[in-house]
Length: 122
Picture (cartoon, one colour):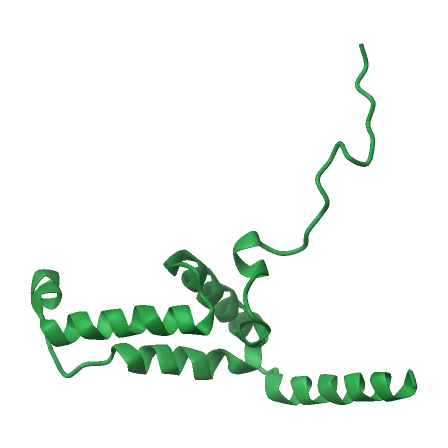
């Protein structure tokens, strides 16, 4: 008996990775990557120096900084550490492939085009 292939046979195609699909727009924008990365790095910076990971785990200020970083990632819109790491990897790859692109200028041009498109519809 032959199976009949219908449009419902295959799932609908969704572009992109499912982990990155539900990120807020400001996290997807390459122009914001450096600001967000710096904010996350500053949230974990301490004056402590530990030679072993066990000392790091026992240190109260370092533990508080880790919890602060976790809360910051949640506030930014990341749902898991895996999602954050994938976001970082994607943006590093974008920087590597397009080192000369100024994303802020491109975003400004895109906004102007959107405004022109909206005003021409009326």
